[in-house]
Amino acid sequence: MEANACKTLVLRSLESDRMDLDTFIPAFYQRFFEVCPEARAIFPTDTARLEAKILASLTHLAEALESTERLDGILMKLGNMHRKMEISDAHFGQFISSFTSTLAAILGSEWSQETEEAWTQFLRFVAKRMSFFAASEPAGEAF
Image (cartoon, one colour):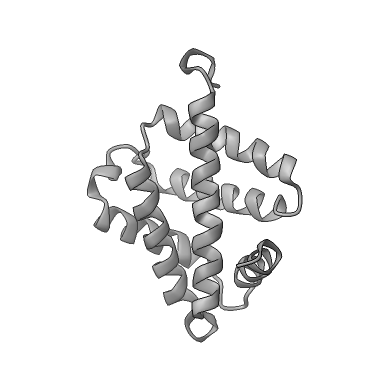
């Protein structure tokens, strides 16, 4: 899928009247930790804090979609943070699957195969860039 079409569908679903982040985020984490129970120990136990962090990350990512430099800056920080937490590619895969299936449930009739493709493509890009930045940052210099 072409990048601009992907961005449009991602933003459209985030801006949907059906999108309720206060419902989506806890439902996503519940699903993610069900399919990836080993990840539960990696993340903070304070779910309110965890939910606030992903909400902030989603907001920043959505706002940065039109600026590669800004988006890369956000992904560098997230990549370094997740590297410290020892997040693996398998975790990213389960994250993406849990994220898209929860989003599909929240959006209901507004969810389509095209929207799923856009989100999957976007989240794979995010994971790939985070992994790239985490791998390129020397372990002792991460912030």
